[in-house]
Length: 150
Image 1: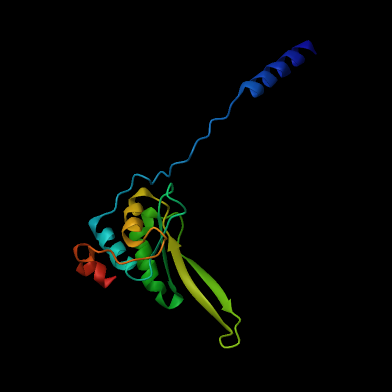
Image 2 (image 1 turned 30 degrees about the vertical axis):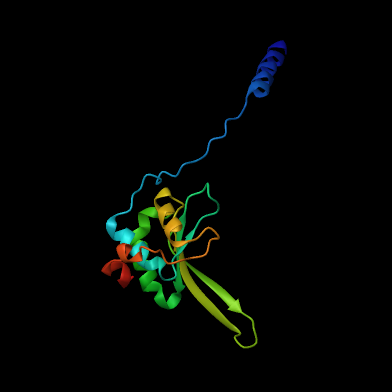
């Protein structure tokens, strides 16, 4: 009985003196770098409907590729190029528009990358401080035939 009491006291002391250290997880993919080809594709896609999302200035940026399911083949081909930067495969989403003039179900397919440091540059180039998408002033230097194709 005394032995159990002493053992419990030791555990209580450990718990009392234990100060948890907050560990922030770093993605194992945080070291990834973009190839010149992927950079060109991102620049061209950001001129369209590619979205670069950033929660706040202290977080990294993620890219969201989203299209109607009519363009599923296109989205899946983009996913095959960006697969190593993603955490999950493309998902199909449904949305019902109940307005009297529409009353229709819409389907979209999307995938998003992980929030990684390699995407921050694109957020800074293509969005202003209010988060509104803009066309960069040096677009002529950034845009390539591949980017234009995407």
